[in-house]
Length: 149
Image (cartoon, rainbow, N blue to C red; front, side):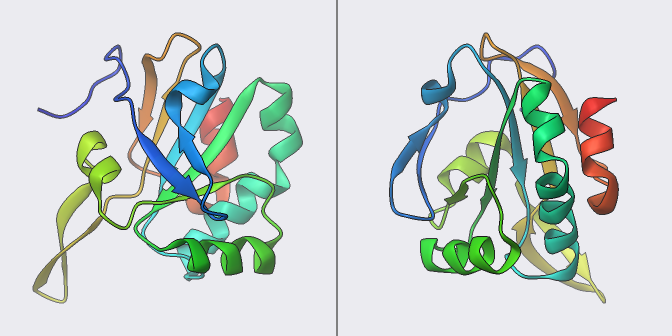
C-alpha cells in the first residue's frame, strides 16, 4: 500500500556520501525534506539539487533539514556534492531498501521499453515523524517553491 499524508514515515537507516550512518530518527523534532531523485549529475536531478542549494538558507529558516536519496553509491554522491557545492547530505540507497519502504522504486517506461527506476518524489516529514506532504509532480527548477508554498 502506498504511503499517504498522515502516515508515520518509515524508519530507515542508510549511509551518506562519506559512509556515515544516517537515519530518520537522527532528525526527531525537526521537519525533514526527504527527496528521492533518479541519478547524480543528470540534467533534471542537477537542476533540482541546485534549486535546493540556492534556496538552502530559506529552507533552513523555515526549519527544514534536507536529505537527498538515490540508488547511486557514496562515491557518486561525493562527486555530485563537490561538483555542485551541495550543502546537504545525499544518502546512497544502492540496495533499494529505503526506496522500497517509501514506494519510490517503480516500473517506468521510455520509448516503449519498461525498466525499474526511481520515481522523483519528495516527502515532507513533520517534527513528529508523520508525512505532512508528498510531492510527486516535482518541478525540478522550482522545487523549493513547491516545498515552501
